[in-house]
Amino acid sequence: MGRRARRKPLPAEEFVADIVDLAHDGRGVARRDGKVVFVHGALPGERVRYRLSKITRAADEGAVTSVELASPDRVEPACAHFGMCGGCALQHLAPAAQIAFKQKQLLDALLRIGGVVPELIAEPVTGDTWGYRRRARLSAKQVPKKGGVLVGFRERESPLLAAIDSCAVLDPRIGTHLRDLAQLLDRLSIAADVPQIEVATAQPVALVIRVLRAPSEADRAALAAFAAEQDFDLYLQAGARDELEALGTPRALRYSPDGTAGEIEFGPMDFVQINAGVSQKMVRQALDWLAPQAGSTVLELFAGLGNFSLPLAACGARVTAIEGEAALVEKGRANLARNGYEVNYLQADLFAPDAQASWLRSPFELVLLDPPRTGAREVLPLIAAKRPQRIVYISCHPATLARDAGDLVARYGYRLSRAGVLDMFPHTAHVESMALFERR
Image (cartoon, rainbow, N blue to C red; front, side):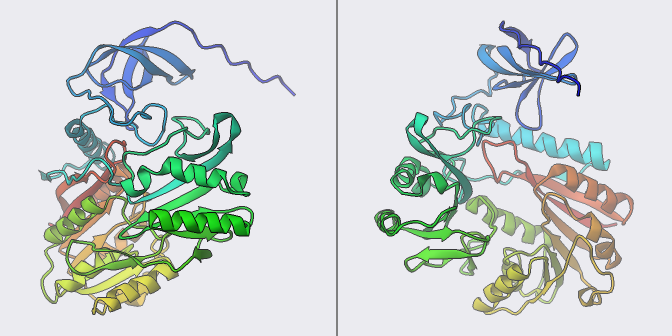
């Protein structure tokens, strides 16, 4: 066997660079000797000093050591853990500039990948920038050298768990109690066997504690006491995702999709949008763009728990909602029924759709789709064959939205009437967006 090539040691000296752009992940972009360098903590228009952290044939990577000329958009990060914790990438960039960055990412992707330009750039949908996060997966690990159990997120570009005691973007009911949670876990006999905690917040706060070994009775008593003290609902997860054991009598988790009286009920492991305030604005905007009337026929794809189905039904539309997961179909049906509405909620694989499926036999005037990161390319031909007047597309990945937008415009006879960003994840580089397509 040949010897593994030895990696050259990184240079110890600092380099100076002028930052010309932001990469999609929020790192500054510079050039040194004709080679691209991605610099953590740097912003466009700045001159910075940095040290290299990685050298590859394609590009180098580094991190700022000092800022010689600061951008007017640079702000002081509100979290003491920023830069070390990998949860946020843009706290040093003013919120308005973060929005501009995300809008540029969206528009660049639409043009570069899809070859399309929206006729109208919609105003960004924004909300609170701190304490907004109602769902999270926290990692946990017992690290005696760092004082015991750590609870939080990974370090930036590292498998190691960051030593943090709070999180400013989490719902403060849990974000200000990470140290308390870590200390609780450290007292358990199974402290070394708790790898993660799922967080779901609504009226109650629910925590799902993943356990690799059964807790003792003393452990259970300590967990129950903590739950009572903090007014949390606690669950243990020892097996599969849906096999949860509630400690005590859990309360229902509910939220309003659009700020009205209708409510969606969800489980502590179910997917809901991270940002409650922006999500409600998103739903209201989607209905405004789709413009359903009483009696309008609407096809909703990737329907989940009914986040859009319920408001659509409430405005009098006749909704057919399609979801791939059987458990979510049942929960979606129950949510609509609980609110007094009847929706044709069906299960179907939208990544291998059946062109002869019963739900495709009816005409649809309007379509709303909210796919995962992989987009909706497989089902687009079936949607286009129904010739709906308007399609609202909610996206969590600009590249797949751009790809699908190119197909809708170039192949299926639609125009991209408007598009804009949804700031669902402030202080991160994650871009969510909404687009409206109208038949030409």
